[in-house]
Length: 415
Image 1: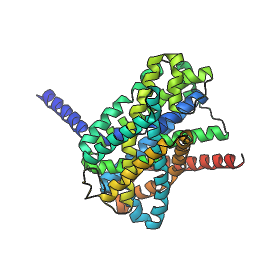
Image 2: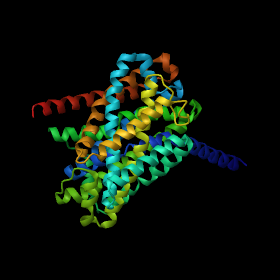
Image 3: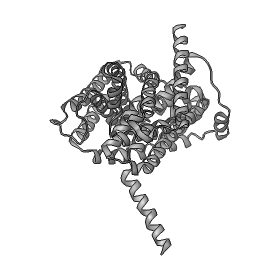
Image 4: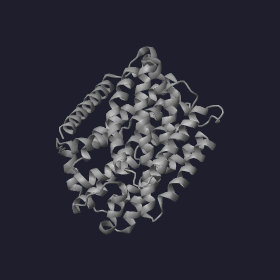
C-alpha cells in the first residue's frame, strides 16, 4: 500500500513537472542561436579546445541568473523591464532599452543570416529561404497562442542535440579536451579577450533574462511550483552548455586540427565535409537551420515583450492584435528589419554576427546590476531575496565582465 502511494506520488510529480516544463528549457536552448553557433564554431576553429573551460563558469552563472529571473517573475508577477522602469525611472530605462533594442535588431538579423547560410549549404538561395521562414514564423506567433508556440519550441530544443552527433563524427581527442578543462589557458590579447567576451555574451545573453521572466509570468507559475521551475531551469542550462561544448569540439577536432580558418557557421558546415563526411556537414547545417528558426521566433518576441513592458504597453502572444497593437507592430518591425538587412546584397553579415555577440557581452553587466539590485529589494521580493552565495556569484560576474570589457576596449583603442 505504502509503495503504491509512493509510486503515485512520483508519477504525480513527474506529470506536474511536465505540465510546467518550458520557460527554462526554451530560454536555455534558444541561447544556442545562429550567433551563438557562429561564435562557438569560430572559437573551436581558431583556438581548438583551449576555451572549453569558459563554459563551466558560464554554466554556473547562467543557472544563478535564470533562477533570479524565475523567482522575481513568480514572486512579483511582473517582468524585468516593468520592474526596472518602476524602480529606476523612465529616463534610465529609455537609455538601457535603446541599447538593448539595437543589439536585438542585430541579433535578429543574425538569426536570418543563419537561415540563409544553412540553406545555402543545401543550394537554396537566401532570397527564397529567408522570406518563407520569416512568413511562417510571423504567422505562428501572430495567429497562434502561447501553448501551441511552446510545444513547437520544445521540439526545436530537442533538435539541437544533433550537434552531439556532428562532434562525435569528428573523432575528438578526449584526453586533450579533459586537459583543456582541468588546466584553463587564456591569452591576454585583443582577439582572445574579444572571443571570451563573445562566448559569455552569447551564453548569457541580456535579452534572455527578460524573456525568461516574461515566460514564467505568461505561463502563470506560482511560488508553490518553484522547485519544479528550478529543475526546468537546470535542465535548460545544462542543454545550453552541452550543445555549446559539442559545437566547439566539432570544430576544434576537425577544422582547428587542419588549420582551417572560418568566419561563420556555414563555413564550418562546408569545411566539415572533407574531414568528417557529408553526413556531418548536413547535420551541422540542419542544426544551424533549426536553431536559426527557433531564435528568429523567440528573439524579436522577447524584445517586443520587454520594450512594451518597460513603457507600459500591453504585451503577450495570447492577446489579439487590437488588444496589444504596440507589441505586434514592434515584433513585426524587428522581423522586417532583420529580413531586409539580410536580403541586401553584400551586407556585412559576419561583422554583424560577431559584433552583436560582443555588444551582448558589454550590455550584460548593466542588465545584471539592475537584476541584482531588484532581487535584493525586500519591498519587492519580501522573504525571497537572494542568498549570500547568489550575490557573491552575481556581483563577481559583473566585476569580471566589466574588467574584461575594459581590457578589451583598451587593447582595441591601442590598435
